[in-house]
Length: 362
Image (cartoon, rainbow, N blue to C red; front, side, top):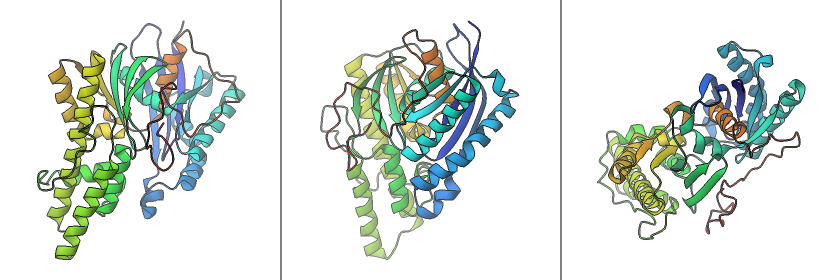
């Protein structure tokens, strides 16, 4: 079978992504021919967070532009495509719908197979895009909307070992940044501020470490940050720059310690020979360093995608489709593919109790 060129489209939140990946039969990694991402930070900045209606409209306006840019970057034409892959969920439903409708139209017009990809599967399989990594492995998926510890046992076989019962860790970073008056996205802003801070000044809690399971919680930690900020404002009339740095460093340290300990427990329980991390928060150096230490102490391999493939992008969606195309049990989707705002990877796992005001996390 010849090499396959797959167009991957991503529009689940506030990044419009289009990428081209070439997958060759028998080769363990893919070749990224083009990777175009249009961010929406400027559009959402005045509101302090992502506005779903604005995001959906921007995706609808940019998906064709991103696709044309990716084709130009790779020096290819639509006739060179072998398949179209698109994030079909989970995510902000307006953005997911925009991507699915665009992908359906393109697939129908060009007579191409359509692959509806679970966004979380894209992240979970992303280490295999650039690394020769065999199944099974443990995956810590940490992003703005999702936080899960998964056993990745095959292209379509995922076992949830733990997950957040409230805020995702990336969501907590964004909310803490807003509490401190830092710009969005919150993760990079908090990390920059924390570089000059004293991580030990504030005794922030380490939520759920007293429980033996691998579930996580960050809502209480976020509340502790707000209370620390309010105490300082009441006592001194505002926050000094050193206060911001110390709070950011203390918060980041608490997050890294909780993620590391819960991951250590999951490794011990599962016995998987490798630990991988993906999602936007995987770009945080403190978190990544803590996880590297966990893997080293357990004597297992540590794998993380390049930073550009940790955040949302079309390349990981195209690669997830390539993995399914090589899987004899997988079939492409029909043109009645339905967008899904929630789509758990482990369909058999019970919802995590206390999964937030909007229900259990996917």
